[in-house]
Image (cartoon, rainbow, N blue to C red; front, side):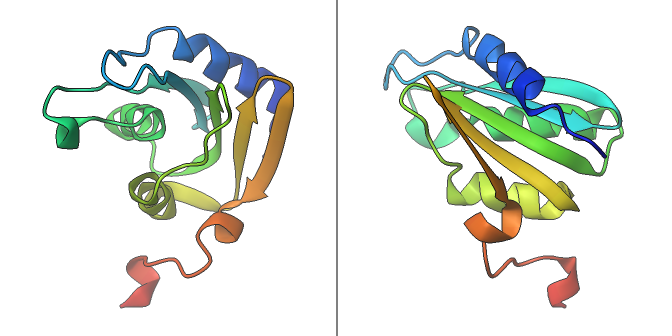
Length: 128
């Protein structure tokens, strides 16, 4: 699957505007390409901070709830740029295709990684 990186980053940047981040004041947006569609997500914080949800997981879970089981690319936009946390990487390991691109973007910066570069020792269903 060909991924239009600039378009996906643009969608992630737009999704960031919906972030609910009254505690950290750190807004993050994500855009996920899955099933030939773009799904959006933003971080959603909670006063009970452990219940906070990252933008990447919101977008992936939206895709999964629509029946998609294979993610082709994930774009994350924040200022400054932010890499996915361990929980998000593990969710990506569950649903990303083998050639999934993880795009980390911020103001004037775009970096593209393979999931295996960010999570080199993936725990997956193939582990069993």
